[in-house]
Image 1 (cartoon, rainbow, N blue to C red):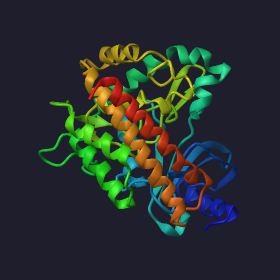
Image 2 (cartoon, rainbow, N blue to C red):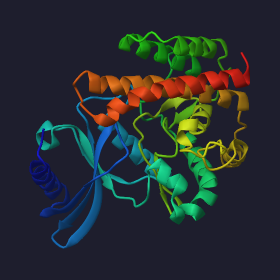
Image 3 (spheres, rainbow, N blue to C red):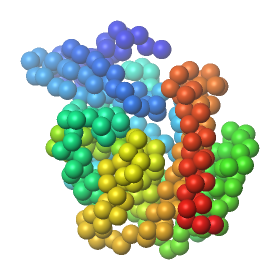
Length: 337
C-alpha cells in the first residue's frame, strides 16, 4: 500500500504531466462518508495557478460486481455535466497501476456537505432544507432525461426481463454467493417476485440518488455525487430508494429523504419530468430498496470478514442488515400481502 508521501509524490508527477506545469500538492484531506471508494480533496499549486480537485480511487475490494469502473464513472459524469446536471466537472483518469496502484480519476472540487445527518440537522442548512426537495426533483428529472445511448457499458435488464424482475434475480444471486440463509429475506423476496410492477418506463437511472450522495450548501443542492451504480432501469426505483427510512437520518416522519412528505417530492418531480409517477411502483421499490440495502450490508461486512479489506466501518455495516429486514417486513405488512 502506498504511503502518504508516495501517494503525494506520484500524484504531483501525474498532475505535472496533465497541467504541463510543475504541480505541487499543498494540501490533502481524506473525504469521509464513503465505504466503496477512496476519495481525497487536494489543493494544488501549479506555478502560481491554484486548483482544488478531488481524487477518487478504487479500494482493494468492491462492494458490488455491478459497480462501474473509474473510467466508466468518469465518462458518465462527463455526460451528466454536458447534460446540465449539477455534477463536478471531471478532468483526467488513469488505469495505470504505476501511478496510484489502483484506477482513479480527478475532478473539480465542489464545496458542500454530503454527510446525511449533517444535511438533515445542521442549523446553517435550514434554508437549504426548505428548497432541497424541489432542487432534488429537478436534478432527478434531468438525470432521467439523459441520453446514455453512447454508454454501452451501463448495466441493463436482460432481454425479456423488467428492471424489477432483474432486481429480484440479482438479490437472490448475492445471497447465494454469500451463503446466507435468511427467512426474512426469503419471505420478502418471494413477496417482491409476486408483486412485480408492470409496464415500467425505461430510462437512465443514477442508482444511488439519496441524502448522503448529494453535496448541499446553504443555497441547496450543489452537486450530485457517487455515480458508480448507474444503470438503465425504472425511474420509479430512484424515488422508492430515496424514500427509504435509512436515508431520513432520524427525521422518520418526513418520508422523502427526511425533508418533506413523499407526495410533495413526487409532484415536484412530475412537474419537472413530465412523467406520471405510479405510487404503487414506488412502494414496491422502497421495499426492495430495503431488501437490497440489507443484503449489501452483509456483503460489505464480508469484505472485512474475508480479510481482503479490513475496516471497522465495513464490519459495523453487517449488523445493519437486521434493521433493513425489519423495515422491509413492516412495509410489506403496510401495503398488504
